[in-house]
Length: 461
Image (tube, rainbow, N blue to C red; front, side, top):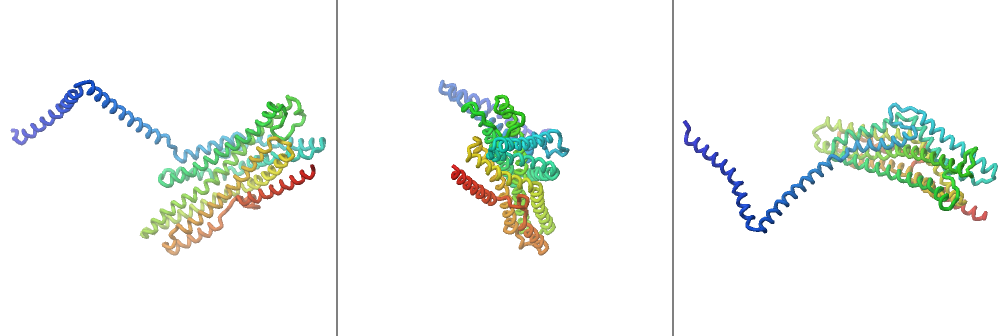
């Protein structure tokens, strides 16, 4: 039998169901009654419905936009790989894709080397024609102005091809750092994004320098030919058995010049970008070390987890060893390259300035600007490493709570500080440090030579 309490519960449930069914109908009838009183009510109802639909559509659009932003956001490791692909395309254009684990010098590599040797031979022929046959000594300055870029390209190609395993090791080390610490998020991800953004901006900026200046050097003779009706060479060398005074000979020689500049531009740019990639990421290791040190200090302050303190300290020591190892490997790879880069750039600057004074090469100011940018950019990389070393030492000495550690751990930190005080710096074959101070000294020497040459030419007139 059903109890009264049970019947009462059933009645309450039925009443609730009935109320749920009748209330929406009642509300709808009341709304129609209110808004059917005239055109003003109907207008208000339509406006209300339109507003609700628009708001709903806006919310949907905003949600989709946020979802799209999340999908478009690229992980730091993917941006790093994008930079690597771009560099590999440039060096692969010259047959020097050292990032390939199976890299071997092949026919394209030997073709580029042969083209550089052909350029040297033609330069020697040009000097012979100018000095021996025509008796014009100024040809030496014109011919040697762009030889420096060819020497730089050949040196980078041979050195990087010979040191390909070491270059892949550094490249893969940075990629592993991006993969591991990018997944942690937080300050680590921000640090990686900031570093790869700086590297990308430097690479794009340097690319624009190459494209604009070398493009203008190529287009300058076209301007002279079309506007001034004068035949001007793109590069300052002649080819044997080819009369450049004829229209056909001038066209063939110009085509050879453009082809060599194109290959040289790709090769030099790709070789430079590997150095830029390695050097600009040196501060990244210092930044991550600083973040690790903050976490280490938090554990040290608690003072209750000695095994964890020991493990984190060993991790800091390993990280500092990684910093030193990358610097040493980078110096070993690029020491000769940097010496050739600085010395030949200075020779190119001197020869180009001479060409400007004697007015023998209309495009000389453009090449002078290009060589000056190369000189100061490379010396700026050396200063970047010096500043990173100083910051690393400062972080270890001032930010670490070494006085809270046991004696054994303090000794380990003292060893790390001693090592950081004698950190590796980039040099030009151990003959001069790569820094802005070196660039300033070289600029003073070039300026003195320019003034001496100007006085000599003035007296000669």
